[in-house]
Structure formats: C-alpha cells, structure tokens
Image 1: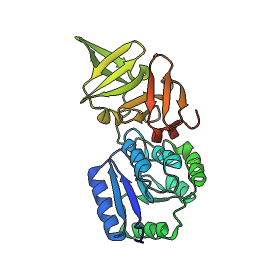
Image 2: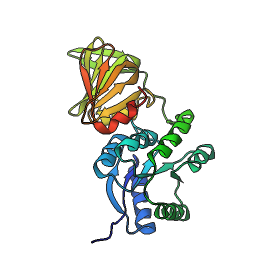
Image 3: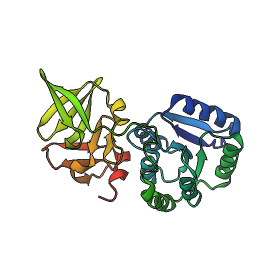
Length: 262
C-alpha cells in the first residue's frame, strides 16, 4: 500500500504572494501535495469540497468570501481539513487564532515561522474537530471586521452605473437584490428590473461590502439583506428566496454553510 502524502489547497488573491507561499511550502514541506491554487474565496470553497485536503492555507482578506467565510464552509464541506489563516493583521487578531484549533501565518511569512506551522500540522492527527473550528469562528465574529478592508483600501461601492437598453441607470448598491454573471459582464437585478454592468463578476466582488454581499454560486452574488429565506434539499444544495423578486437563486452545496444560522 502506498504511503499517504499530505495534501493542501492555497487560497490567496494576490498572485505574487500566492506564488511566494507555494515556493516556501515546497522548501518547508517537500512532501506536501498542492491540489488547488485559489485566487478567491469561492474557488477555495469549491476546492475544499472537491478535494477534502489535509490542510488549507487561507488568506483572510479575499474578494467576496473571506478566509473566515471559507473556514466556516469547511466545517461542513471538509471537516477534517486543518485550517491555517494567512493574515497581515496585528497581534490582537493573531491572539484569537492562537487560542483556537487552527494556526496562523503573519505576512510577510518568515521561514522559521512557516517551519513551526508545518511541524505543528505534522504532529496533529488530522482529525481537526469541526466543533473546535466552529467555536473559533464564532469567537472571531466580533472581529469580522478583522478588518475586511485595511486602512489603505477603497471603501465599498455605494452606487454604480449600469445600462438598460439605451438608458444608463444610477443604482444604489443597497437596492441590488443580486448580481449574475453574464459572459464578461454582470447583470444587476433590483426589485424594479435588470441592467447590465460592464464589469466581470469576479472584479465586482472586490469592490462590494463583504459583510452584505456573499457569493452563493460561481455565477451569483446575493445581497443578504434581500434574502427572505433559504431551503436546503436532500443533495445539500440550497435555494434562496428573495424579498422583492419572484425568482429563486441556486446555492451550491459548499456555500450553504454561509446560511447555517438563518
């Protein structure tokens, strides 16, 4: 029987930082197999559900779904996965991670700190208890600002311009029920109708308030304030009902963890 090689995914939206972490991991843990390199939270959730890796290295501040969102989804999608947060934030947040069942790496990542993380991961059984992770995430709820936007980041969008036929509409972001990917563009859906935004949905994620807008499918971002209810089917997928629209929205199974408390 062949020996099981440890596996991981890496989620970091900055390509240079992602490459640097991968290079450091190759030196610190040569046996580690990287199953997926993710550039946003949504792809990280899908990779967790699809691969169920031993370890996930998650940047906290990513467009759309943050590292904390991804970790919350991991409680259901891949409960045995050990979570390592990668963060640029100060010690007050790091202290919270230290008290939990997960590890952290502070940017810029020092080789000796990564070596200590690898040693810790290798010494664990791999049976990372979902309850312990869920408890940590709950304690971090007060820091959910662990500041999604740093001091130098632009504030979230408050309004946008989109086209409806020959008309250009000014739309308050708070009035948007959901966004839907439309090839290289994005359809903006409000209670009054639809309009087309000349911005890919992936780029739009980075500009929206992550506490209000969540990606529930690769092609859909929903305004949580517009959600009337969520129903889970036998397959683990879900359906979102909206307050101001008659249609329903599909929720991919890995993203259902976002609605656990609804």
